[in-house]
Length: 203
Image 1: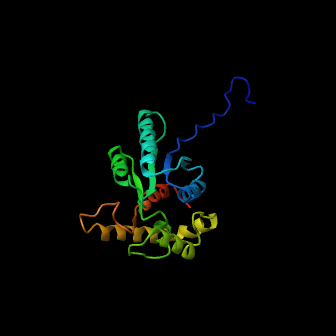
Image 2: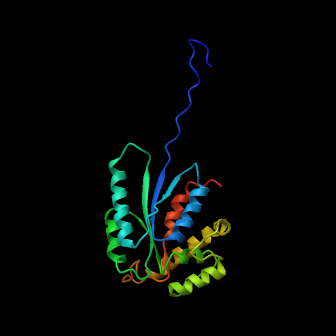
Image 3: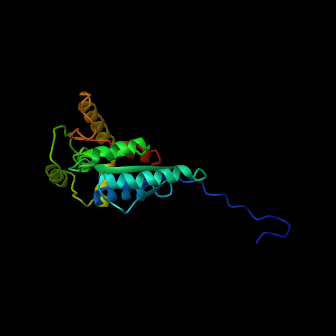
């Protein structure tokens, strides 16, 4: 207890923590980014919304969240992202256009999220059906819809390799100006989101 007439030592206020709010399509994406939340605990907050769904549904939720965040200017920065696949979704084009129009970035994978995981191990450049890609990912990477913590940790040292491969794939696909991000199998820009997260990774 401090002596009378003397103030006790002031506990410094905690630094504001940046928050990422992610609206993801399914359990694979949820597990992947939950592992990132574990890794970056105490440095950044990663909230993976439990409500999954198709691109149209996710974008609707994300746009509402982003608008609410922009209205609240007093707190630490909050970044809202959507993470979904091209797959066979009929609303992927208008949903993605709506997200961009409302300043919500989209981590989009064609044909599916597994291409991002697969690129950590294989420099894959040919179009591939999502079922084949999922089988290959299970064989080569060691995971299917479930990503064990050990697999996530094993992929981390290969993150730069996967990023370079994903960027190269994007460049190859978009040499043809008629191609769009939703018509570029195989491709993914998940690396843009993970790059934003890695900015907080001091390990």
